[in-house]
Image (cartoon, helix red, strand yellow):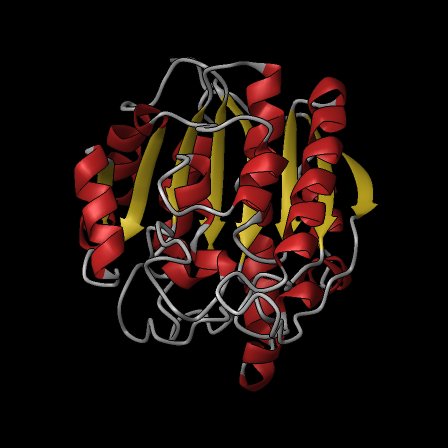
Length: 301
C-alpha cells in the first residue's frame, strides 16, 4: 500500500481523569503543549490546527457509583471528544487526541464510525481494557473502554448511550497490540477468548516492532484506521510517564514502540491517533522523559 503522511493535523485535548484511578492524567494535554509538541509537529512541515481542550475533569471519589465512578462525567467527555473529532475529520488529514485516559478512544471511534461505518482500531496497550463493573470492583472506567466499544454484557448503559449504538465495533475491527496476556482479570480473559480477538503480545512487538505492526494492521478492515496508545505499554524504566507504574523492565522501549506505531500512522487508512494515561507527575525524577515522548510523538507524523 502507498505510504501516507499527514500534511494537516488537528490536535484535540481531552483533559479528563474522571474515569481513572486517581487524578493526574488531566494535566497531560497542557504539559505536552508546554513541552513544545505542536512546535515539534510544525517543524516537520505539518500544518497544525489546535482545537483546544474539552472539559477539564479531575477524578474525585464517586461513592454513589462505586463500581463505575464518575460515569456521567466520562460520558460527557466522550461526547465532547466525538464532536471535536467529527469536525476535525472534515477539516484535516488526521487527528491527534491527547488524553486524559484511554476513554478518549470511545469518542474517537464514535466519530470515525459516523464518518465511515467500518473503521479499524489498533489498540496499543499493556492491558486489553475488557473489564466491566461486573468483572472488577475498583470502579475505574479507564480499563473498561474496549468492553464498551464491543458492547459486552455488563457494560454501563450511560457509556453505551454516549457511543450512539451498541456494539460500536465488531471484534474483527479491533487488534490488541502489545498486551501482556497475564495482565488481565479472569473476566477479561473470558471476553477476549470468547470473542476471538486478535492480539500481538508485548514480546512479539519487541522481537520486530515494524513487522509486528504490519501484521497487526493487516488484520483490520479496509476502512479508516484509528490508533490508540496507552503509554503504560512502555517500559516504565525507559519512559517513566504512565499512570500505571507496574511495567518496570517489561514491554517495549519508547523507541521500539514508535518504530511499530509509525507503520500504522503511515498506513493509507490512518485518520486518528489518541494518547492516554500519561501522568506528568510520574516524570518528576526524569523531567526529560516528557520531552523525549513529545519528540517521539511528533515523529509519528
